Length: 311
Image (cartoon, rainbow, N blue to C red; front, side, top):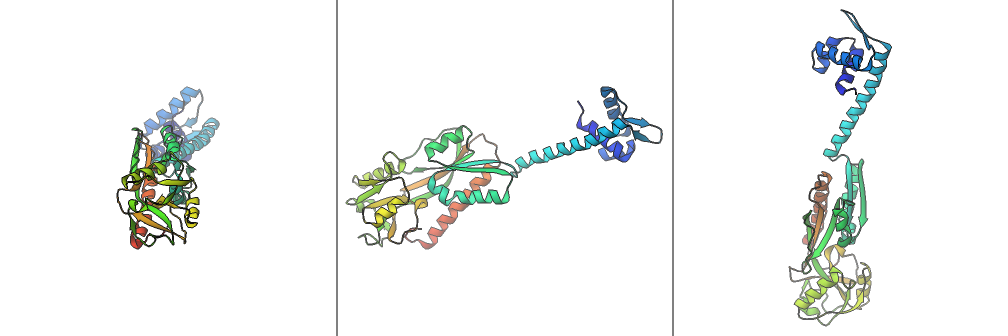
């Protein structure tokens, strides 16, 4: 099979009409260039050049092979450049998954940046809770996943996955604007022992976290309404049907609902980015950096205002 060195020699001898000029261009001796051409002629059983003491003239076969060699070498160079672009993160694949509130508040920054700055990267996104996206990362269907765990409900994550902390977000209690506790900047969970509660579905981490936190406050919450819709708790709270607990990323604007931060700093939800520890994808580090930047902007904004209202 023809080698790139042989193709270069044939292409350049036809282009320059000289073994010496070709040798100078390729960094070989004239004798080495001649040997490359001779080896091709012997292998293919065809004369590629008419040689004389003063010139090297291509035959019809030599001219045709030189034209094809130019195209093949251009393809090889393109293949090298294309493959190298994967190492420099100009190309590649980033399939990302996350739970709803991170998908709403953090992920759009990453998707927009990659689609804008790296249009040749295959970027895709799908929503799912940690129980769904974690195995998808493990078996390669996703490259990166944004997951969470509540401080009172820690997870045991697969050991073959690398985890990076993106955000440690505080928990808030939603109350109607006319509630007896409205106006507070911080609240102890024990102050809510007599309240009716709106909670996520039974068995979810959010529901388990609520019961753990309330148990620390010395009571069991009376849960009357359950939903996994992030918007519905605000409407139910607004109507005075109960109170609800939400993490920072799940907070939305609602002028008739007030969000009061839990006083105990250990009551948090931690958000992680996870990927396969052995995955060499250079896009992962960049995506994680973007997620942390997006998270920092949310945290900084809250710290500047230190307001208990929903953001």
